[in-house]
Image 1 (cartoon, rainbow, N blue to C red):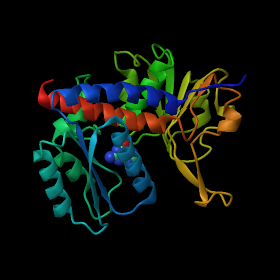
Image 2 (image 1 turned 60 degrees about the vertical axis):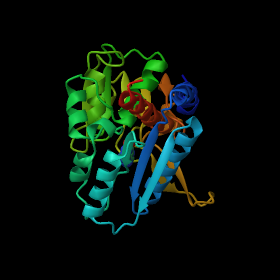
Image 3 (image 1 turned 90 degrees about the vertical axis):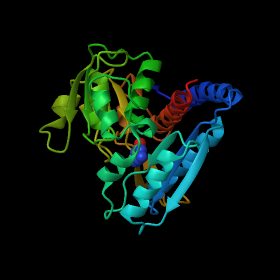
Amino acid sequence: MSAKLMDGKALAAEMRAELRAEVERLAATGVAPGLAVVLVGKDPASQSYVSAKERACAEIGVRSFDHRLPAETTQDRLMGLVRELNADPKVHGILVQLPLPKHINEDDVLLAIDPAKDVDGFHPVNVGRMLIGHKAYLPCTPHGVVQMLVRHGVRTDGAHVVIVGRSNIVGKPLAVLMMQKREGGNATVTVCHTRTRDLASHTRRADIIVAAAGRPNTITAEMVKDGAVVVDVGVNRVEDASKKSGFRLVGDVDFEAVKHKASLITPVPGGVGPMTITMLLASTVEAAKLSSGT
Ligand code: GUN
């Protein structure tokens, strides 16, 4: 068996075309959705994610306000910027790229963002609302994973989903979304992590595996049941002398081997990544609509 590819790039392009039309409709009413993107320091992976987010904004006509600050930026300076962005009516969404440098308290920064502009869905108010199933900004990567499954017709209702990884950004919120009583939810969810004993005994029982561990080859072929759906959230840089950059990107799944067991699988790159950014755009457009009452 060889798996069908879940092409995140193609699906994201389709969804971005819908969003572009929405942005044009809003423009006709005098509303221009705006996203502030804040990056502190020069982490290469974060720089490339932030650039991709800004390009995506330009692609659909969302204004992006770029704030690239030096690594030595103080907590006070960053909190001051967040307060300015909270008060700026041109800014409908605020994204502070994580991780932040060690001397900055991430929790305090996330708490300072106005929940109504928290298009990343990281503010405790939005996390709490999501948990109890109220309307909320959803974290973009888990939201993108659910959309990818729904739009590929994957039945989650009653399915056994095994998530490998328990981060606040992916594993924990994805578990909440997939167990929620709604479309793309109703699953029985197992969350595995670095202290899980015999990981393979869990993944082998999964109808859907989501790998979000941040380590290449976390999921190998013998860990996957025949016909399972495999979603790879990992983005890992591995050295590759044949590349100009000196590295290539791989996921957490041994793609070449697992594609012979799975029924559907996401590639890296071109799988979950483009969907994450698309959900960020969707939340920013939504925030602009809510703030303008259109
Ligand atoms: N770092 C890794 N993923 C994300 C994300 O979705 N949002 C932000 N702000 N930072 C991240």
